[in-house]
Image (cartoon, rainbow, N blue to C red; front, top):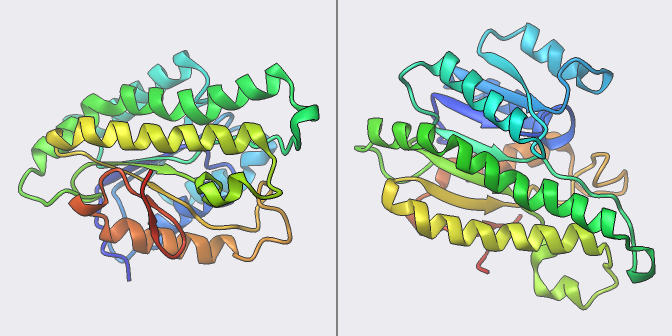
Length: 254
């Protein structure tokens, strides 16, 4: 059972898939957060119908409009979090939003495809983390008697097994997705070293090959199974996991 007991969590990319599953999973914890910020590109569109239903049944959920490629959206999201939390800090930021165009092979690549993945999968989580940093620092200070971990202050970047070198020599040739998620994993290591002195844990986590729009119907894990595993791993994160990418069954160091 997860040892998570966070007062507040902000999750990006929650209109469907693992992001939506995480929102539901946090609400079902024995000690759920008082504040769950569920962000997505457009909380009012058809894709977010189920997310709106979840929010309507839980007063702890705040829907946030956030395209991680938009500086204006990021600034507005921070304003929303500050307004809701008041003097309280943000305990946990989960950078889940990402794109995967499924473009396969060198001959199919375009500059637009590469750069759009860089913007969303690399710049997005970095700039959201940067913007949320003052609120995360506040939580770390308020909970400085707690050990390093999600219950104090943490940034967790959702990763993928495709960052492992063994996949680079395989038949896996979704260049834009694999390369940008690898860059994001490297950034996770760099940010962890910068922020650990502030009492903020930074790590990565792979949800597995999940039956979602991105993972496809042949994936081996359901959203519910993935979320349970993710929550369990979030609950055990500590100082020894700083800069580590937690894969399904083991840890991976860049």
